[in-house]
Image 1 (tube, rainbow, N blue to C red):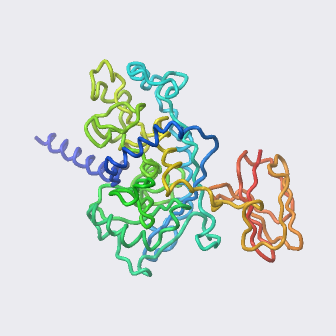
Image 2: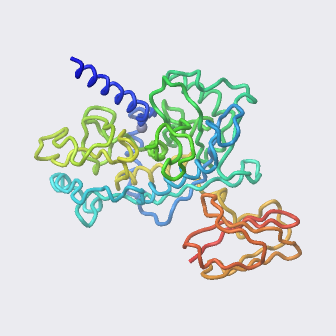
Image 3: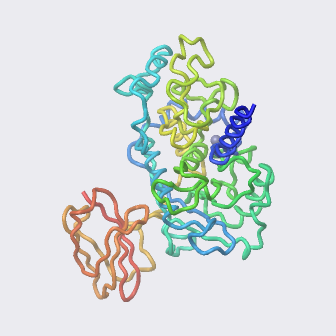
Length: 450
Ligand SMILES: [Zn+2]
């Protein structure tokens, strides 16, 4: 009897501990069938092949961090380092470079793909369901809607007491929290939804069992239908302790040490029109041919194959469910992939939703002399060569340089200098931002290292 009590007590403790660390559920509500019907028409429109596009979408993101006067770095007023660790994760996840990508089994869904005659374009060289490179990158917004340079790239700090807003922890139901966000927080802090990805980060009630909610992209002609966004509500909410990566920035504030930024990855999937892989019903439809049917959501960290035979004869779905897809409820470290058909949905949203189609078109992440004249620059400023390999030179006629700071696209400083030339041979290849502070103004330019 004693053993039973001890065993039960241990189980109860584990269950509670697990419940506190497993906030992978989300509060996103998918829209009605008329939205999906219209979305399917766009996907299948022969004149608009969504994937017929090269290059990378670069989307400016602004994190509205809602706090009550805590110092920067104290919960929930998260530090820029915690936000940057989050941006690193979503940039990895949306470029087929998830940190745990190597966990994808060598035989993942090979049998199932063959049994259902999955198109070769959905398969990789091993015959597995292919992990799609979504080719979307997120960069912290540098410029506010009124043209000001942000002190902290990608961050808008809001003291809700100054605004006269209630404490977010007062709202313990899904509908109450939604109403608080949609009627108070978002309309009074949102940045132009056609230019910025808005992410709100707040504390929450312990009664809420989810850590993220996203709006679903509206489609032209379907604005205002239930569960799609408006220009005062479009964007994503996340619980502050689900933002960022413990592994990348352990000094931050997290639900637990397994938090790895996948709450936002999942919500971004919804933001781009994805459904849960189980279709929000027993063996439901997520409208992607390359995600095996699933009897329901998965949680925790399953082993492959998981739930073999789900939703069909075991001989058909012998490989089980795709619990490692970002659109399942599996714990963050168990997920690492989007599929090709999911990419088609994402690109369909990017190319058709009035709130997505212009994202990345306004040069709000970085600036260059050719396309943006920051703060009414009087003097012609150039950096050359661009792209550069070994050295880069800065020409600023009639201005005296005080300091030059070079950052990567997520805002991490990689060099500080005070001269008009600089060796960049030690930088890895990619795009960088150069902040040139002179005796007259701040210039921001972008350059590429080959
Ligand atoms: Zn979800």
